Image 1: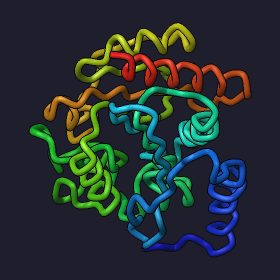
Image 2: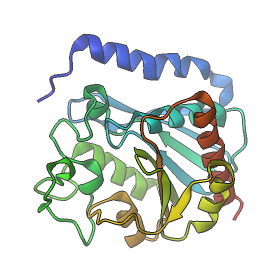
Image 3: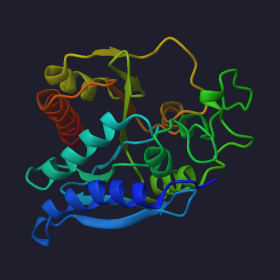
Image 4: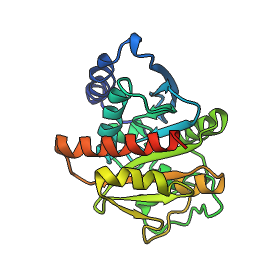
Length: 245
């Protein structure tokens, strides 16, 4: 049920899409478009800037209670109009907008979007309800929009921003060089395995389709400006490294 209060919705949307977007003007050549709709019918906004041939997707807010990645994505959005990252970059700051407005990991249908993708290991038999994958793979409208964009636009590299008590970079596919470039700024461990199974996740989806994915876990609950900027520099370095290949 879409029980987001009108006042909360307007406050959050104003903060995310007006305060930040007002810092970007037409001369910056940033395309703004509707990426898709949330389960509650809200517009999911995406931003694209073409500075190279290789197509990169920066994604955040897959889990609505992981606000740290949303703030980093928004900062990168602002900085991408001032710097040349040498890629064709799309930024989706909040995929799970309903969950973000409610402060919940899962979307408004109580489904974990990062367990709901169509992968060989997808299963609806999750033990922990926090990771509920739904009754059918790729059932959620947010994920339908995500997958359509990845396939139709031809995404070649994905960085998906999350937050966790164990900050790290989980590499999926051929993106170790990009993670090592980021580590020069963030000093995070690079892991090929985070220690537990994640069926139906974006990393596995990418590997199965030869799209490298870094699942970038920021310290949960962190946030000084210096820490945020550290992650911004790290992510920009990873993207530029991919663009230079």
